[in-house]
Image (cartoon, rainbow, N blue to C red; front, side):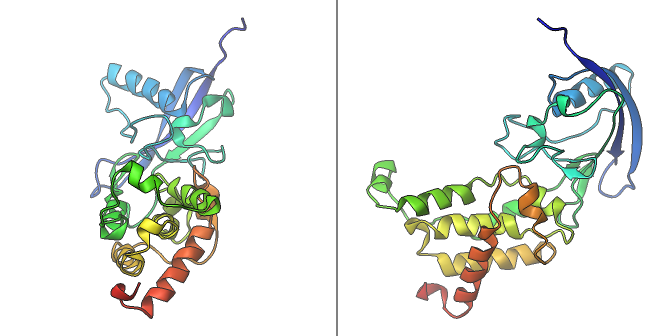
Length: 257
């Protein structure tokens, strides 16, 4: 067996006490980092050293660490979730870096995502958009009942593509305008693609877009950075679907869907 490879890193990490404080970059040196570690495990090791030294640990979001929950997120050397495509921060491994590298780590940057502390931002704006209409309120029965509804394979696969969105906020952080179009569109497009979601299609898109605008997200100007940075590869087509739905809904009352 080959010996475990380790490296020394120069870390430049954003520190901010709370939303009302001014933040700044602080420098840290970390030695003995295994190339087998995940990015968050590397931060764990740094925090253990800081705690042992009586210093405040780095605050960062995490939960499942399996690339599913959407809790993790940071900008690593200017790239959302780091250098790997379609990879969440928790699934990024240190073998993507080299001994002696300098790594700069910052939180999402968006007016709608205020910094809570260090690398943690308040992403509850996404929850409010979801609550505005990203659901099916009518009874669809049990799972066996749903299975009796015939759905073309193409539609089912497309709905799954949109449903891949985990709400991490990387799309907002990557967009130069801080837009939340891809997130909102993924929720709208997922439901309107399926028969269970068509009953509320007009009211859903209107209320969700209204909520998105009220939260202070920027406008979409077709940079496509959102889809490129998405760790789940949600297609940009979702935005086109939502735009069509929104245009349709402006000419129909919700009851006319």
